[in-house]
Image (cartoon, rainbow, N blue to C red):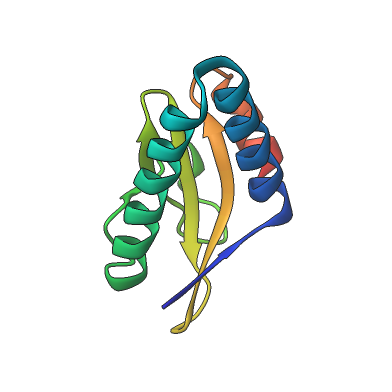
Amino acid sequence: MKIVWSKKAENKLDIYFSYCRDNYGDKVTSDKIEKLAKITNRLSVFPEMGFPEPILVGERKLYRAIIFEKRLKIIYYVENEDIIRIADLWDCKRSPENLKKEI
């Protein structure tokens, strides 16, 4: 399956990696990019590997989540038989109600 990032998720990812580069250096950032690539590669083969996101139960779509870093979740859903849509990169320190509003 093809992984498609929403603009919002792409923007958050860019901000996250810029922060990492500025604060931790190129090596750490490169390692995190490689980790993300491994996760999304596995996701493209096993689209149901993430757990149903409890905060978003009852929404129109079945949103799933994968922990990317200690406090970051990749929020996604299966759009159709060919596409997995990554809807958000969620910082778990934020209020759960904000996730509902943003999705």
